[in-house]
Image 1 (spheres, rainbow, N blue to C red):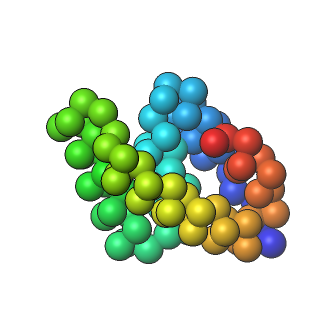
Image 2: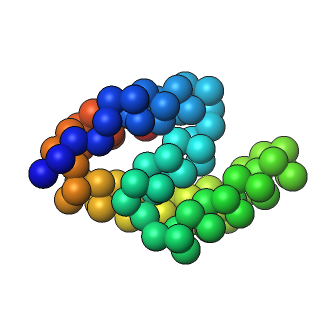
Length: 87
């Protein structure tokens, strides 16, 4: 099992620290997700930008995607603990 690069984990952590949780998830999803998941996340991010806040519906959908992406990351990367800490 390989490791997700530290630079990628650092970028996710910086996004999270800047309250850009969707951006952090987009980074991880680009490493383990599908085009469909990435498209959904970009739509959520755009809705958030347009509305000025994250709607409950988008928040719920993002959390569902987060669970799927984290499960995929756990199966793919040996340093899953570090990945999880970035969120």
